[in-house]
Image (cartoon, rainbow, N blue to C red; front, side, top):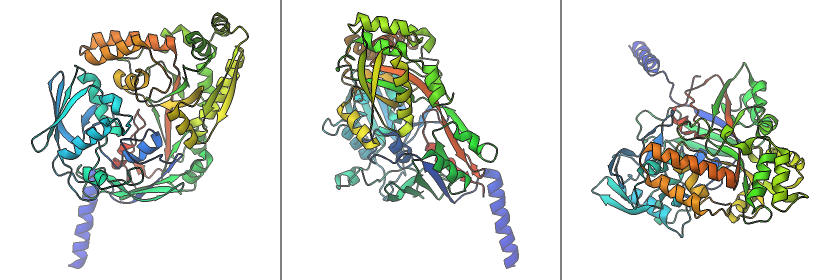
Length: 501
């Protein structure tokens, strides 16, 4: 009898696994290069932090694997009129400490974001909100000053708008060190410089998820060490930065590639001479060979980009439309002469070794030398780099910006005169007018005209010199199943990963 019972249980489990196609349980060991820089979702800016926090916190809306906006903590939303949106908050959602999510937590989160004294980088994305009002037990209304709903919706997917617990924050929690989200996992252990361990949220609102019992993010800065960890079986999955690593793993491991929205850039402090002159910035752009940068740094794993990723065909002007993208050393020298610098110029590029910023800076240094432009490289540690960026303490810098499928989200906070991530001292009245018009306009054709004009203006002014978008590369053991890559670099689908062991 007991034997038959055991056999029956085994058959039920086998059938369940066959039907649903997944195995539950196990811990995914994941190698990452960069440690999180703070854990407060409404405050952080580093990609490394978001990759962890997006598995710990949830947002009102989110992207599916095709980058379509779908419900998150909001089970639905209604655009009542061009300036009003109402979200209905899910019932039965709990924070990791067991307390229920309420509409009060949602209202508190956005009031926190909009508090000028708090300094959230998401604040400028919601600058046009006139009022936030709780309607009943589970509805919240956002009223806008102007019609900009198309531009606003993607902002509710941003990791900076993750919903936090009002009681937890007001109870004195250090949000940069402590977490209490509603996501599929919670942080159970964190050894700085070593690992961050996540455990399964047994009360997660998406039925059946996550499949894993936990994820252990191993912080391994050296690329070769991450590759070795895969080859030695020490980790199940790894994020890779170097395309050459793929050759070391070909055949015996799974390799995933995903063109991403994020873009590499040379950011310029437009208040510092001689970089305050648009002609000088244009000269720098003419002197660059972007394809060569991709070849030298990304080994061909990338695409030259304009202000928007060229794969976002609904909005992007292709790089070929910009004459300034054609390498022309003589034109660069001519522009420098017109600007009053016939003997060339000198400036510094601040960079870090993270994300190959230093390698890009070195290639730029060599290329600009041909046009009589001397570049000094200021190589600093990652924490110092972030601090310099925040304080605008640089001539220029090489960095990586998050991209978007919606032009307002791509441009507003970066290029608007008072934008929260405008670290270029860039202020242009026409640019502000176009960005405001893009937010206020509903019809696609009219918005397209506006953002076409904006892209031409921003390339001409060049507070940012856009370089390229790379492929995100991941490698894993053959036992890793269900891993989905996203063009925004998100790892939210780790909740659907399972181990076929």
